[in-house]
Amino acid sequence: MSDLERLLLKSEVEEFLYREAELLDERRYKEWLDLFTDDVRYFMPIRRNVPHDESEREFTREGTDVSWFDEGKDTLARRVQQILTGIHWAEEPPSRICHMISNVQILRASPDGPAPTEVAVKSRFLVYRNRVETETDVLVGKREDLLRRVNGSLRIARRKIVLDQSVLLAKNLTFFF
Image (cartoon, rainbow, N blue to C red):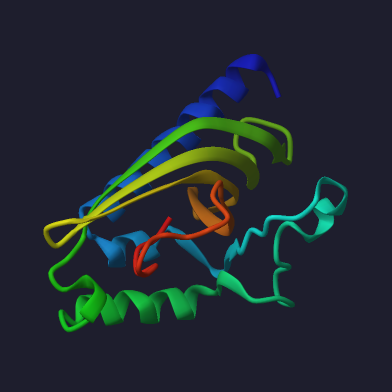
């Protein structure tokens, strides 16, 4: 991939991720769901405090251990439907949320060329949530995404969310990353 092709791809990926953040912030969840492939894996392991020589135990394992999220598109769609009912106790009244995305890196693209079909991406996030009068949550971490080109547009085929904190102080996780 030439430098120009890589720069154009990075710009396309950044715009995609920024658009996704805007959809979430505007509570346009049905449109957000359209950004995922039908076979998506949406995974957020639980992070544990472990001794430095036991780093393999720091994160729970996908499909094996308990995690914050280990979902497919069907489960994501059901969560969205539940929030949109207007009777979801943890989102009534709705949270005010701001997603900030930065440090976008293209790890690899295949096949190599101007319009790869799959792109592995790493990014950092900060999610700020304010709920009712006094509840405030700030979550920081990184995402590892596999983006797949479907009918010419990028879609999220896999997302791994890693929080930088090991103790989650939020009262619930009804929002998306």
